[in-house]
Length: 393
Image 1: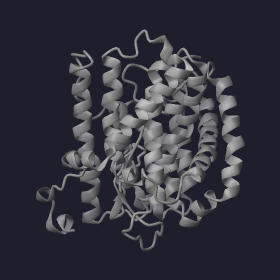
Image 2 (image 1 turned 180 degrees about the horizontal axis):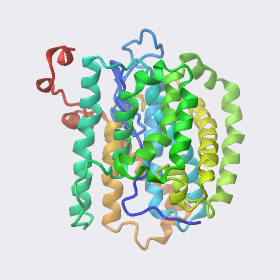
Image 3 (image 1 turned 90 degrees about the vertical axis):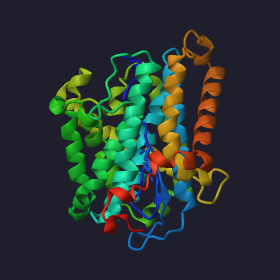
């Protein structure tokens, strides 16, 4: 069933995310990661850490910066496809494939860099300033943008109902603050999967704080928490890269078949099965199936990410800005009517143009000058708000 995203759909995007590690705190999302994410985060987005869980190094690993940058590009490009994909089955198929793995990949990396998070004052401070404060600021900004630029005069500023990109910051805050629990469990991933399945068949959860997404995406964050450096070494083997080629080809063929038949809600993970008009048991089936598909496609994506320094490696530290700002460009273009009555955008040439413009825009938003200019909102110091043991560096 064809179902076009709403004008202000709470679509997953993650992410950049704020990592708990000293210098690799931005993964996206919502990844300092940011991260994302993802939405990354921001900080879902922010700084860099080494692969070792026991004694992380302050030296940034170019591989993870590359992952974050490429993930945020996919996030922005997929968002740019939304307004033009209804008349193109091929574009919709590409959208389904990208949405299957880009947020899971961002969230997994966010979890990986959250392994050392505990409730020490300094890390709680980074969580508040790198995730909670950006959420409040950008949730307010998006609500006001929709009200005045989008013509929704009755749009309320509500911190309980995340708009568009900001859900990832809520999710990252919840996931990270519960990290000590997941680290203490003997089998955390099965528990997280059980919670995700139960959420998918529970329509009474409601929309507050986008808890459906928080719970249904939880297994990817927990998986990142339990991953070790050697797992990434395995993923980056030549055999995995070669196997990923037929894997993605098969995924595209299946997505082309499924494009006119499948609801996008299964990919957004923002609704229960009943809310999507499906029988309750299909929520469990789809949750597990989507988790498996996301894992294999994420592995294929991670296998092809360069491990050496590239021209875009430095942009990995600024994905929080790219994640949080590109939504204003996408929504602003929609409010201005740039996608209206532009049939050519649904064709191959239009798809290329939209993709290149989105990729170039988010790349510029990840650059160091933009990151420095936005630091007051994404990386505020706020020592004045914390006790000395938390404010100290």
